[in-house]
Image (cartoon, rainbow, N blue to C red; front, top):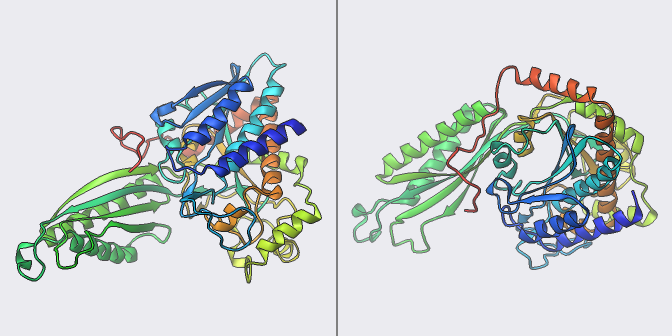
Amino acid sequence: MKNEYEKMLADIACKVWDNPEPGFCEFESARIQTEFLKEQGFTVQENVADTRTGYIASYGTGHPVIALLCEFDALYGLGQNADVSEYSPNGKEMGHGCGHHLLGTGVIGAGLLVRDYLKDKESGTVMICGCPAEEAGSGKAYMARDGIFDDVDVAFSWHPSNFHAIATGSSQSCIQCYFRFHGIASHAAGSPELGRSALDAVELMDIGVNYLREHMESTDRIHYAITNSGGLSPNVVQAEAEVKYLIRSTTNPKCKKLYHRVIDIAKGAALMTGTTMDVIFDEGLSNTVVNFTLEDILDACFKEAGVPVYTEEDLAYAKRFYDSYEQPVTRDQLPAYVKDKTKLMQDIKTSPICSYYVETNHSDVCEMGSTDVGDVSWVVPTTTLNTACFSYGAGAHSWQWVAQGKSSIAMKGMLKAAEILAMACEKVYEDPSIITKAKEEFKERLDGETYECMIPDGIAPHVL
C-alpha cells in the first residue's frame, strides 16, 4: 500500500477513535469518512435507509458489483486512555472496544486500492457501505430490508481480532425489545391493597424467563437488564417499570418462537400483578449464511499477503497487555474451527501477538454472538476475515481493546486487512466464475428460503 494512503488511513482511524459515538449517532465518524471519500473521487449517498449516518460510497460502473462492509460505532462504558496497560478511564462515556474505528477505516483503505485497480477497467463497481449501529441498532438489517444490497454480486468484510484468520461459522439471530409495565401508585404501608406494582411484574417476568432457560435449546441465549426499577422510594408502590431483553437463537424462526415465549411470560407477569404491559421492539438481526467459496478466496489472498511484520517495539508494547492476564488464552477457549490448535497454543505461549496466519476448517456451526452482517449474507454471498490488531488475551468489548486502538499493531492489522480485501476483490473482477460459484453455493444453502428481515416493516431506525 502507498505510504500516503497508510498515513491518511491512520489519521482517519485515530480521529474516529477520538470521537466514539453510539449507533445511529455516529455523525462525526460518518462525516470524517464521507468527506474523505468524496475527496478521493467516490460518489457518496448519505442517510441510506433513513439511518442518518449510513452511507454508500461508490466507484466504477457496471458489474461485477462488490460491497465492502464498513462499521464505525462505539460502545458505552469503555472510555479508556490510549496505550495504558491498566484500567485507566479517560472520562468519556464511550470507547472503541470492538475496533470499529479500524474496521471502517480498513474498508476505506481496501476501497482506495480497488478504485486504483478499476481506473483501467471498462466494467466493475466497488461499494463502500458505511453501516451504522452494529453494536446496537442493526443498521445493516435496515439497509438489507430497504434493498441496498439487491444489485450486489458479492460482499466482503473484516473484523479486528486477536488472530490472523478467516472467519467461518454462522452467528445467532437475535431480537431486542423493552417490556414496559404500567401499574398503580399507592402508599406502600398505608394502602398497599390499592397499589399494582409494575416492579413486581418485572421481577416475576425475570423469574419466569429464568425458569424458561431449562426448557430451551442449549444454543439459545436470553439476556436482560432492568432499565427502570420504578423510582427510589420503597414506600411508594412502583407504577412504572421496564426491563430490556435480548433474545438469541441459531435461526430466525427459532428466535421468533423463543421471542413469543418470552412475551407470553411477560403477559403472565402482568396478569399476576394486575398491571398492563407494552412491548417496544428495538432491534433484530439474522443469523449468518456462510459461503465457503468466498472463504477460500480470502484464504488464498491471506496466504499470498502474509501477516504484518512486527518490530521489537511492537512486541514489547503487546507484551505489556499480554502480561496483564494471568493466563491469556487456554486451549478450550480456542475456536473449534482452528486446524492446528497445538501450533496456535505454542504461538500464544511464545509471542504476545499472533505471529502467523491461523488456518481454519470450514464450519457451519453457529457461534455464540450476533452480527448484522448476517442480514447481508441472506441477500448476497458474504464472508469476513480477521486480522490481529490486539495482543493475545485481550478480549472484544474490553478496555484493553480500546487502549490498544491507536497503536502501531492496531494500524498494521488494519492495513493488512485492507490489502487482503483489495486482493480478493481483484480476483473476483478477474475471474467472474468465482461469483457464479459463490451464488450457486448461496442458492443451495438457502434451499428455497428467502430473506425476511427480523425488524417489522413499521419500525424505522431509532435510538431508545
